[in-house]
Image 1 (cartoon, rainbow, N blue to C red):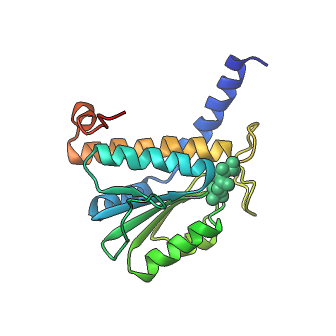
Image 2: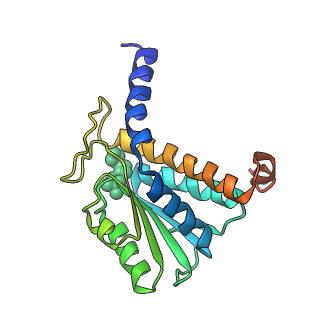
Image 3: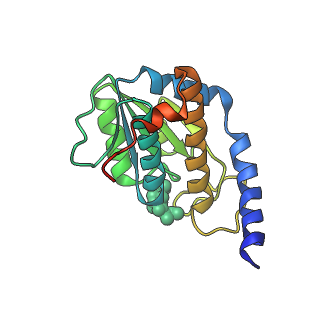
Length: 186
Ligand SMILES: O=C([C@H](O)CO)[C@H](O)[C@H](O)COP(=O)(O)O
């Protein structure tokens, strides 16, 4: 198959995952983001790449967002929100981060394939994406031709872009204002 044929299949897979994500939980997620004093983003591997992009856009909006594990990331306290992206919901370092967040009274939001996973059990809001999971018992309803967690990782990245649009609407923010905060030392 050529690239266009593969692209059509990937888009049709995304067309099955993204529209099924819960609206009410997404509204709750946006409320948590808006109510947090500081937002801490965590994910491993490709989920880590996706959540970094989300942290960056929130910075562009003027929110206090950080990536867990970076040298300049401060401590989390009860005013904070930890956003975790984890297909399995059981990656060890992320389970530890969620435990720490709950221990200090912070909120936790999780984007995952597995709503019964260890991190899901600690989370205040769980966003479920139906996709194959190479690392957990829960496989999701949707089949994919793509390897491992690719469909989940694409879906979570695009889902977080929908959250950015919801936040922009709530904060009356436009792209030009956001671009004004973009790094000028690239
Ligand atoms: O990078 C990943 C891997 O390529 C699977 O597709 C995962 O995102 C990484 O291993 C983290 O796993 P999860 O916490 O289960 O997302």
